[in-house]
Amino acid sequence: MSGLAKCKGCGREIEWIKTPAGKAMPVDAEVITIVTSKGEVVKGHIPHWATCPVAQQFKKK
Ligand SMILES: [Zn+2]
Image (tube, rainbow, N blue to C red):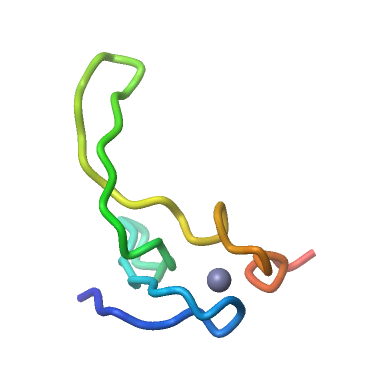
């Protein structure tokens, strides 16, 4: 299941999506359309750590 939430770091609306591996992944709530390298048009979300100004908190170094 996915659900709307707010990022604790920047306050933007995010959604939690479950990956095929069963892990929860934060993504931007906004749905965008992209074209894959194979020319397929798909809709999806941007991983939130790609746009979050405080994304460091999602990465464990
Ligand atoms: Zn954020």
